[in-house]
Amino acid sequence: MKLILVGTNIVSKAENNNSSQYNLAIYYLATYIKKIQPDIEINIVNIPIHLMMHDLPEEFIKKVLSLKGDFYGLSSYCWDKEIILTLAKRIKEKYPLSKTILGGPTATFEGLDIINSYKDIDFIVVGEGERTLLRLINKNVDYSSIPGIIYKDKGRVKMTEPLEPIEELDEIPSPYIEGLLKPDAMNLMLGFSRGCTNKCKHCAWKSLGGGIRYFSKSRISAEIRWGLNNGYKHCFIYDSSINSTDTRLKEITETIKHIDIDRRMAFTYFIDYTKWNTKQEEYLKGVNTRCILLGLESISDRAAKALGRSVLDLRLFEQVVDSLSKIGPIMISIMLGIPSECGRDFKKTVDYVARLVEKYGNDKIIGVRVFWTVITPGSRLYLEQKKYNIVIANKGIPYFLSSNMFPREDMIESFEYIDHHKYRDIFIWEDADPVYYYPEIVDFNLGGEQKHIYEKDSIKLNFQIGQNIYAGWRIVDISYDNQSVLYTIKNPVSNWTLKVKVINNPKNKSQYRTKRFSLVILNTVYPKYSNDVNKLLTIMLKEIAKYE
Figure 1: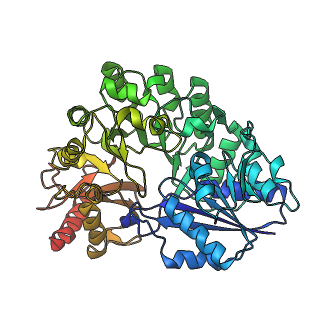
Figure 2: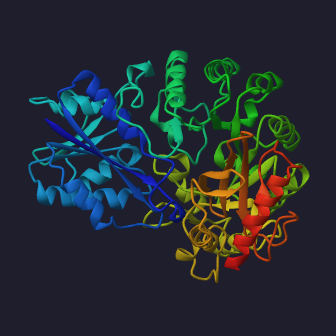
Figure 3: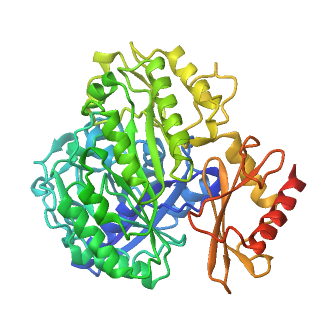
C-alpha cells in the first residue's frame, strides 16, 4: 500500500520558495498512520506557492506524478483550492485506478459542492483527518461505516455521520520526534492545542467542533527539547492564543523555562488581550520572546459586532500593550474589509495604531500587520453574505471586495490611505496585491515593490551568511519580511549578537542612514559604545550606498 500526501505552504517572493513555514498537517497525518500501520509506504510532497498563484507550475505537478500511489491525500485551504483540484485532475489522468482523497478546510466546508462538481475527487474527509484517512486506505473497507466522509456510491453522493474529534491529542505522535520532519529553515513550528475558545464570525476554526483540546505538558516538553537538541533558535507557536486560561499559560511557560534554561530558543506566539492579567505577565517573564502577536482588528464597535467580538475597551487594550511591552516586542494586527465598517472606520483604526507605535516606539511595537479580510467558507460571515451584501473574489482566496457599508470606492481609498500614510513603514502587508482586484489603484507599494527592492538588495549588496564583515563580526542569518532585510551578526569572541534591519525609510532618525535606506538596530541590549559596532555599521552603510 502506497500513500502520497500533498500539501502547500505560502511563501513570499523574497523567500524564493524556501519558506520558514511548512504544511505541518500532512506530517501529522503521516506520523499517525505510520504509528498504527508502519508497513504503509508514505511519500510527502510539500509545495511552495504564492498568493497570486492560480496554476501550479509544471515542475511540481511532475514531482507529484513521479510518485505512483494507491491513494493521494490532498490537503487544501482556501488559498490553494484551484491548484489542488487541478492537481487531482492530472493525477486521475495518469493514474485512473488510484484514489484521490481531499482533506483540509476546503473539504470540510465545501465538500458536497466539490464532489458534485469534480469527478476527479473520490473521497472527501470532513474534519480531523488522522483516524478517517487511516480507515479509508485500508483494503475491503465498508465506506458507509467510516464517520466523517463524503463519497459516491454507484453515482449517488453519500455522507456519513460526523467524526468525533480526538480528545487526547497525544494520540497523534510528533512528526519531529518520530523523524518524519526536520525543517531546513531554523524556524520550528509547534502547536500545543487544537481549536479555539473564541467565536469570531470571520473564522471557521470554531466550526470544526471539539472546543479547544491540548497536547500534554510532557509532549510540549519533548518537542521543545527536540528543537533545542537539533539547534533550532526560534519557535513559532501557532495556537490561536497561548493564554486561553491562566493554568494553561503557566503550564506552557514553566515547561519552556525548565527546558530552555539558557534561553537559547526565542518564541513567537499569539496573546488574547481579553484574557490578559497581571498573573499572566509574571508567568511570561523569563521566556525568551522574539515577538508577541496581538490581535486588535478594529477599534469600531460596529466591527466588533460583525466579527462576534466584545466591544473594544481602549483603556484595557493599552494596559495590555503596556504590560506586554515589558515581556517582548509586539506585532499588532488589524483587518481591512470588515463588512459592517466603512472606510472612515478603518482609517480611524490605522491612525490609532500609528499613535500607539509613536507612543511606545518601534522597539516595543515593531509593526502593524494589516490583514485583508477573507470571507472563509464555513464561517458565519460566509453564511451572512446576503445580510451585508458582501462581494468576494470569485477566484483564488475569497477576499472581501465590498459590502453595502464598505463600498468598493472605500476599499480603494483605504488601500491608498495606508500606502501613503506618514507612518507607512510600520504597516506590514503580506496578502495579495490589491491592484489585481482593483485596477483603479494606480500603485500599491506596501509590501509589493519594497519586497522586490529588498530581494534585489540582498543580492547586489553581496551580504552572505558566513561573511566576515569586520573584526570577527560574521553574518549568521538573513531573513526577510515585506519591507526589509534582517541581518543577524555575531561576534564569536565577545559572543555579542547584533540584529540589524535595513529599511527603505530615508526619514528614519537613525544615525546610520543613506539617502534611501536606514540601518535599525533591533536589539534591546547591545554594545552601544563599542567602536567595533560603529565601524561594522559604517562598512555596511558604505556597501548599501553603492546600490543607490
